[in-house]
Image (cartoon, rainbow, N blue to C red):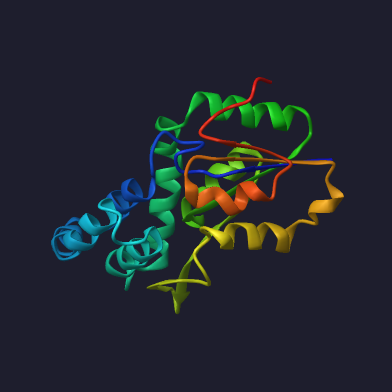
Amino acid sequence: MILALFDFDGTITTRETMPDFVRMAVPRARLRLWGTLLAPWVFGYKAGLVSGSNIREKIARAGFRGMPVADYRAAGERFARDVLPTVLRPEAMARLAWHKARGDTVVVVSGGFDVYLSHWCSAQGVELICSKLEVVDGVLTGRFDGAQCVLAEKARRVRERYVLRSYSTVHAYGDTAEDAELLALADESWLRSWPDA
């Protein structure tokens, strides 16, 4: 048995998808207001002064707090159907298909939200470990439900769900230093590159 672990944003896709999802899901008036208020944080993130986890937390709180879960889920389904197919990296999709054709266990391990990734992964026939937002009484709180699935949390969740020693080989694919802990789980790992099949 072989386990193949794929980061999503920047690995399977050509860019980060969370900003695109926020723009689709969050009402425009709220985007304008919070876009202005969060601009210094976004600038800090781009300058390397604010962590990715911190900026995602602030964006989730500003964008989604108080949103009905039905609206959120509808946006996630629409995003998976209409946007994700336009940003897929062909070489990543070829590698994913290669693993599936061999009967390997394929898992997307992402900091992205389950609300759209679950639809995409289901359509691809692959498993998913990712971040979720908290829902109370049918409304989003704007907080993450548990830890964000980033950095060491990615590796922790993989080890929690899969007995790695039961696989003959573990492959892992990523695109940034934030994937280091995930890649460290693998016997064969690739950072910003693709092996010859």
